[in-house]
Amino acid sequence: MTALAATTGPQAVQQLTSLLPLKILPSKGSAALVEEARTDLRTRDALVAEAKLVVATAVPASLADIAVQLHRLGLHYPERRLSEREAQLVAEDWIKDLKGIPIDLIATAFDRWRTGPKCQFFPKSGEVLAIIDADRRYREQLAKRAAHILDALTPRGTA
Image 1 (cartoon, rainbow, N blue to C red):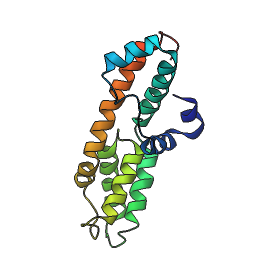
Image 2 (image 1 turned 180 degrees about the horizontal axis):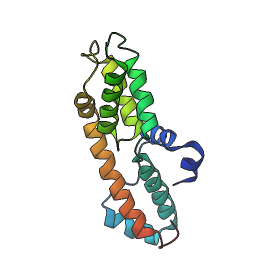
Image 3 (image 1 turned 60 degrees about the horizontal axis):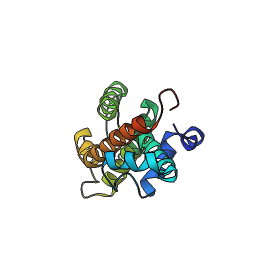
Image 4 (image 1 turned 90 degrees about the vertical axis):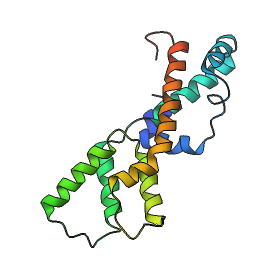
């Protein structure tokens, strides 16, 4: 994990990288990037930094962070009449359904739901997952590519 990730946490890194445009990773194929990085130290340093940042954006949300976001969304829908046990079961299902997804994607999906056309109803997890899906797949693909590039450029035992 980068120094930035160590000092600010995964959620802050995810939010930061969603604001920063990627300059190097999407510019060329992996093999061309690795070859260029092997011959140009500045390119290598920039590529490694960007790749580490991208890998950090794929860190899954903690179960506690998911629970906080779910509780926060639920505050917008106070009319739900579930017993304490029923509410716990529903929350457990939501946490299971959202497990493995970065927290910023979850928070963004909840924000989109609250301001979207169906905002008067509490969403089903599948509806939220549909909002997240394209961004999640792109991020996973980019993180996989970044990890592959880091493996090619980082000597064993120094990552």
